[in-house]
Image (cartoon, rainbow, N blue to C red; front, side):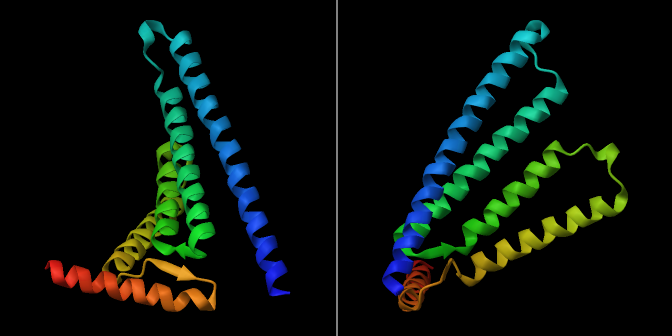
Length: 161
């Protein structure tokens, strides 16, 4: 039963990789199309500020997709989820939201909420980097390997200092 579960899990992960790759290709083509469209519509090849913010949003969306794809690939190879990368994807997603946000359309409580999310993610990233916790395993067999890698990494860091 465990073997069938692993096969199903790997099939799902491969499907996610293919689908994410397709989405990233489409998003990149769409980004190129919008850049061409906005430059062609504008005077003197200068893009309007609203359109530029829209382009930044799509660009950051592609970056988020690339990071997620990388996370899925690492999980497939090592059966380990890298906590640092997951928090980094969350930071990029919040940054994207802040970039495309029209501040005049939002009330103060939502802005304070976004600020708390930014502080929480930055604190989490700092603590992850400081503690050396880089990965989280969902497989009991890999937990020993992860702890061994983290211990070796700490030893190497201590030797460098």
